[in-house]
Amino acid sequence: MYQALTVEEAVALIPDGARVMLSGFMGVGTPDRTVAALAASGRRDLTVIVNDAARPDRGVGPLVKARCLRKFIGSHIGLNPDVQAQMRDGTLEVELVPQGTLVERIRAAGVGLGGVLTPTGLGTRVAEGKQVIEVEGKPYLLEPPLGADFALIAARSCDYVGNLTYMLTATNFNPIMALAAKVVIAEPEEIVPVGMIPPDAVKTPGALVDHVIRRVA
Image 1 (cartoon, rainbow, N blue to C red):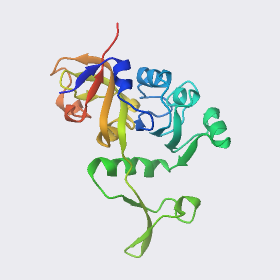
Image 2: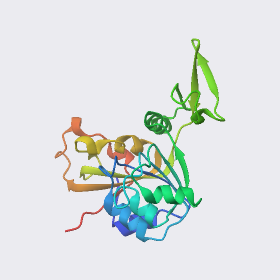
Image 3: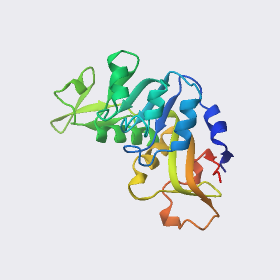
Image 4: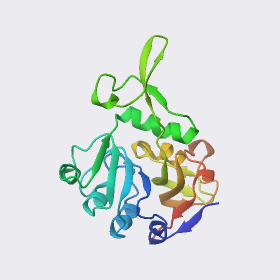
């Protein structure tokens, strides 16, 4: 059974230097209240794993603007000038990962695999320093699993035992990240009685969810 917390109580669980997964695709499917509270908390030296840098006021943007991050791991930074500026001035380390490889590395951590084999990046800078494994005569990069201390995810609905469902494209990285972190904090749009979410609509079972952000009026 999850523990219901205010957004401030949830953010207080995250220490400086933590490794944090943040759901969302260009800010769609991101837990905005949690991000705003974390940005205001004064946390420092976080490593954030997220699909993209979104924009300065969306997705991971507020955390970048508040200089909460030491390292950004994601697939795209092109629309966030704050990330680009901090990368250039050396205050933010950026690790770019091809999007498909990123999600598979997260999935590997979630299901206990030792990594994934992919041809993506062979012959490029992505391959520098990485092991190449040959399978049936074809070379593949060995990419390690990518886990985190915390996953901050956003849901459409949460029931009283923590089962989550998502809405359309806002699903994106949420279910995968919920598998791959030690502590999962969910920010739902609504909390409903058990039975209101049809069983086949549950995308993240309550057994994976540690904390749920209370709704506000």
